[in-house]
Length: 222
Image (tube, rainbow, N blue to C red; front, side, top):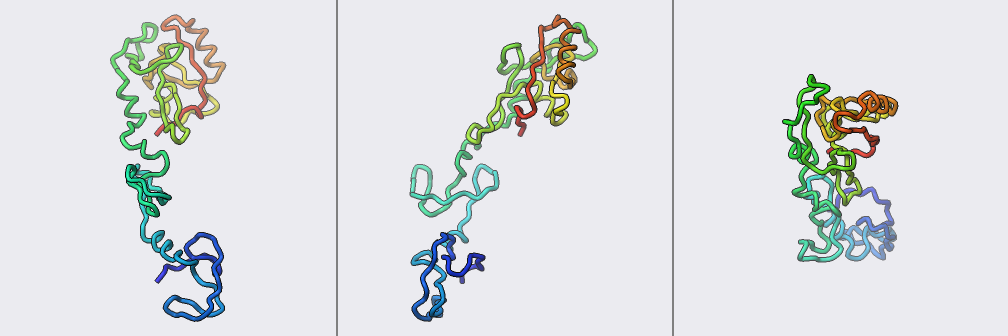
């Protein structure tokens, strides 16, 4: 028996959306009643069985069901009519190192102690890539899903330790005045005015740092 369907009578119950013909006679074995619409188009009954009995979840671990292959591809392990192993682009997630793990792999907590603020303790040294001004950067998200972004590491560190950055105070400033330092104890939030005042007060003397505005939308944490 076929499972209960919510598709209106008169449309093929396989889900293709096509209208069926009217039964020319009664055939109880096939479920035909003379004058009534057939349940399936020719050979479409097998499609329903395939769709309801074979379900494969994407093997990247996202939990979403995959689509059926439109053709057989031995190289990809695809068989026409059967679910594929991954959703488009999800195969690249296998073996990808999460941003948080890459972050800690590039952090050295034994940095210099700021001369003007020895009470803060040592800075953290960022061993990864940097941009103009000396700020550390880290890539987050997935390029195949257009969520790949380059984020400043001190902002990334703030969100990891304290949560989202409020829109009212979108700047993450350095108490230590050391641009690449991602030590959360050396960071504080502020407005554009706070950023300017902080720069002028410090005279950019210690490390030549200047906070850069990057909105919370520029950061994706997984």
